[in-house]
Picture 1: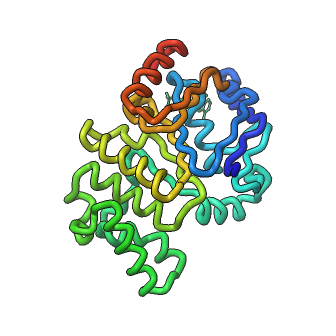
Picture 2: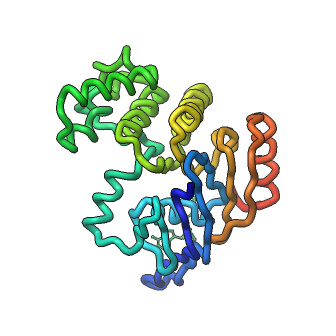
Length: 251
Ligand SMILES: Nc1ncnc2c1ncn2[C@@H]1O[C@H](COP(=O)(O)OP(=O)(O)OP(=O)(O)O)[C@@H](O)[C@H]1O
């Protein structure tokens, strides 16, 4: 089932204070199905962040459409878009975005608290997800007392607690050492497999990309190449690195 459709997306940043206008996304179309785990790669300046910002409703496109679960988010008013984002999209960022004054448990429960869910229901769902991400034992710790990998798993648990339609991840391994990167990517792969969560991830990191089912490469705002994994991660890693060389540019 189609869950995300980008149709003929174009984004032009207008000329500003002497700088020329930039066509960051150029008539780009692609479809994401439920349960996909897609990586978006490309050289610096190729348009990855711009694309993710448009998909997540943070930025608007100049022309084209983004449909999420059949709903055209490019046509929503600001308020409706904010609500739609809250109820349907999950975000995972490079710098975790955890609240330092809250414990791990409180951070994970935060979206449900905002939604005024019943306390008994919050407790049940929070316990379940803390255990799933193997952070139950550190539930009363604060973010500054836990490791980078534990912080990222806490951020994932907070994202997943509302069962978003799509998880949009921006360089989730960007600030992690190799062991934590492995654990975080394993946990993303696990939620993709166990819960059929749909994940769209922007990354520079071929290791992170090797966990995806498909990777699209963009350059000059257009899709230049798509590669598919047959499930063997090491082989797919080689394919990702090879594709990066084909695409060229600074990574
Ligand atoms: N706010 C902006 N105003 C004007 N031009 C911008 C703006 N943001 C990005 N650009 C330009 O749009 C193009 C795409 O940028 P974008 O940040 O999407 O690339 P990227 O692939 O995410 O790069 P990186 O990997 O370095 O983060 C670049 O030429 C960039 O200079």
